[in-house]
Image (cartoon, rainbow, N blue to C red; front, side):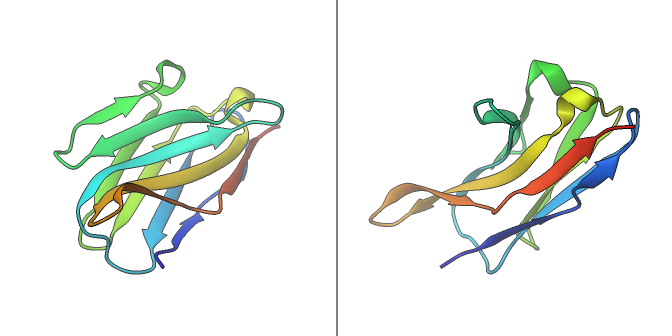
Length: 120
């Protein structure tokens, strides 16, 4: 069973930066997309950013120009560089990897989440 482990969260002041990392416990074949979601207290989980197998990326409007997603295929890792953070970015951040698994079809692998708190 593949496990995703996130790291890099923490407490940061408004205007600061953080870099989140998500690494898989073993190689994942046939990755379709790697994603970052977040969930703030009392709110639904939302898609923050994604990077597809062909390298194309998407960003939520609220983070465009401030966040950057990248990946390391060899390490089965995905990263989220966050800058100009505001209190509205406070949430638990989750990574998700969607892979095409023979016999199962598209399969989601979720990380356990990492807390990001933006506060002075």
